[in-house]
Length: 190
Image 1 (cartoon, one colour):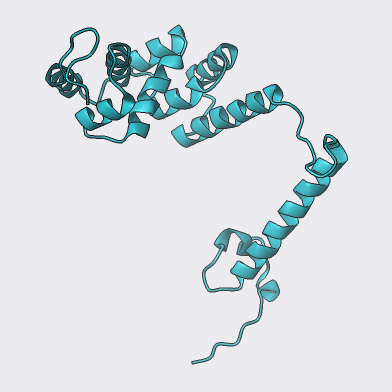
Image 2 (cartoon, one colour):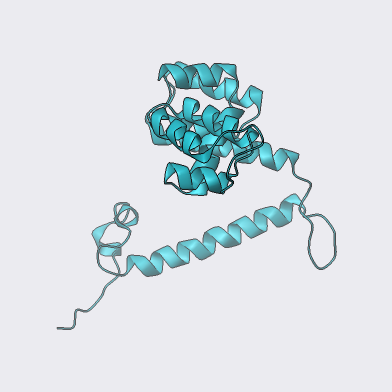
């Protein structure tokens, strides 16, 4: 850790600033981390001062990617910080869509809202990413090849799930759809 930053903030003052922010105000915390980063501290320095991991500091800083509506919703406590982090990964229009859906009450649970935001972020990333390229030939994948690979992956996972389903109490949701006579027969050896 540096003795003092270019702006003259001593580490002891930065540590006190972090301690007094509190953990129940994630945006205030993120703004303070941004201020200290701009003052010359590193994320590792801030992690030591905050007695947390550098990844946590990064997660808090990611909240600053929220648009004005998202930051207002987080500050007011209308959304929780996990959901805020997920929608911060979206473009501004995507953030607005998720906030509008959340305000309308379209999600049954917090986990569902986070999963939808994560899926939307993945869709946005796929739309921006260049087409995948086959390693051997350098040609792009075709939709038919994509479908084939997905079918193969699903089939492999289904076989694995079926194999695991043979063990006692494994994957009960798959057994719910089977009639008792369809259960695999296993002999019990004592």
